[in-house]
Amino acid sequence: MLGRLPSAIIDVPIGRLRTEAPLEDLSPDMSAPRLIRVRRRPGAAPHRGLLTVGGLTLPCALGRTGLTRFKREGDGATPVGRFELLSGHWRADRSLPPGGPLRLTPIRTDDGWCDDASDGRYNRPVRIPFAPSHETMRRDDGLYDVVIVLDANIRRRVIGRGSAIFFHLARDGFAPTAGCVALRPADMRRVLARLGPRPMMVID
Image 1 (cartoon, one colour):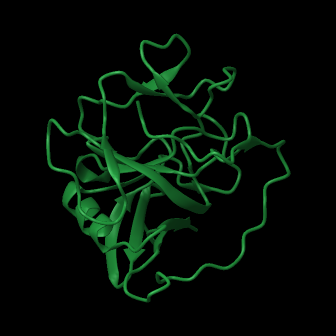
Image 2 (cartoon, one colour; image 1 turned 180 degrees about the vertical axis):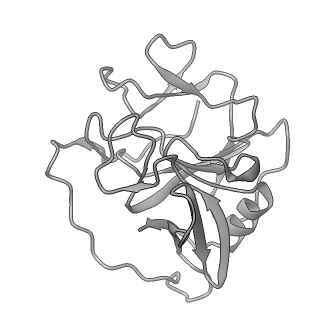
């Protein structure tokens, strides 16, 4: 099953989300970037974005409706905010794991992710078969051959505020995601290899 979520997990009512303190771009030893910055690409369609880490800027795909500060389940938008990269996963049957400080675990055939807001396991990894609505992590289309779980509505969960917000591989032509951030496979490996410890994604 997918890696454990952080132990400090609470559900909070809508309207009581926390205020964040400033972040530093570099790791404490100043050797590698901590932050991945994502923004909409100026003049482009809402689902086209730019991702910057250190001095590297790359094209990325966003949700089909662009960015939002008021994420709702099924709205097709990528949430604005800052999100720790909680865990990484990859298809060990298709490639070697990417390099970098983020530890990745192989995706199993029974790994899933609940996106049913009426279920108590909403926005949590599950084992399939699983009756409520869910995503299958071992996809045939290759989008989750490398997939990073973002702390988007996980440690401080609000029911209905979005689920399965991942950093994963892009479709050809950067077709829109369902609310995630996506890179070309080669670019994903470049980004993960450059990161410092405790990386964070800032989407604005």
